[in-house]
Amino acid sequence: MYLTGIADEASQDIEGQINATRELGWNAIESRFVNGKNLHDLDEESFESVCRAIDGSGVHINAFGSAIGNWGKDVRDDFSITQGEIDRAIPRMKRLGAKFIRIMSYKVLDQEDQLVEERVRRLRLIVESFLSENLIPVHENCMNYGGMSWRHTLDLVEAVPGMKLVFDTANPVFNRDRSKEGEPWQCPLEFYHKVRAHIAYVHVKDCLTPCAENGGKETYVYPGDGHGRVPEILRELKDSGYDGGISIEPHLAAVFHDADSQNQTSEDPMDIYLRYGRKLMDLLKAMDYDFVPYEA
Image (cartoon, rainbow, N blue to C red; front, side, top):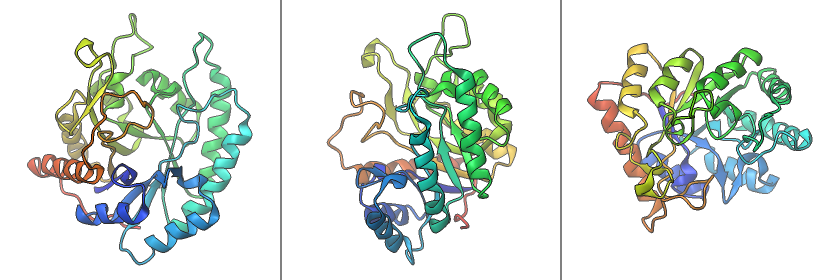
């Protein structure tokens, strides 16, 4: 098992991201944003600057945290938007040697008809585009159709050949289970148990369930301090022999999907990121779950 992280939560600057990764003793970044733009949306000059910074640094890009089909994208939008992101991402993944790319299944619509057939049609095109290039697309259980419940995720896995999952420990905490009567909050451990056979990658973040005390908003905390069942899930990953990537996504300094989040702070994002990574390593060491350098 190797450790990595969405290092734009430490710094928007690629050099800062590299420094944060080295400071933790890691050698991989799950790249999402650089200077405010997703890696697949950078202009060519900016992307070349990223490549120059990475080359010879001893740090690798193991995955792209893409915006493909994410919670900000509508399944009714022209597919050319998605196709453009795919077409830009593939050569950049190859250039940087990234193996995984995070995708989603478009935002949940404010209507009963969730246009499932169109979502599936698009996901098949997305997944096949990457698989045909020997790249691995992984769907995240975030605020998208697949994140509505573990049942919705498994329906997509069954309908989209070759699609694997990136499981996020905290996302169930603040998402309602749209498959159950009364739509209770999802249980991270239940979600994990139901989808674990399809997990190829893991995001670790943690938060408290929305309630009156936190203004009805999820409140992000350090791993093990919230309702994400992080220690239990890590223990089960270890016991199952999971040897893939575990990527931190603190959300303590910035929450990319919610500008009104409770987690507004003046604390240095770099300090938060480093503390978060070290807290995760402490949890892993306490259960003798060994991690090794990422192999590009």
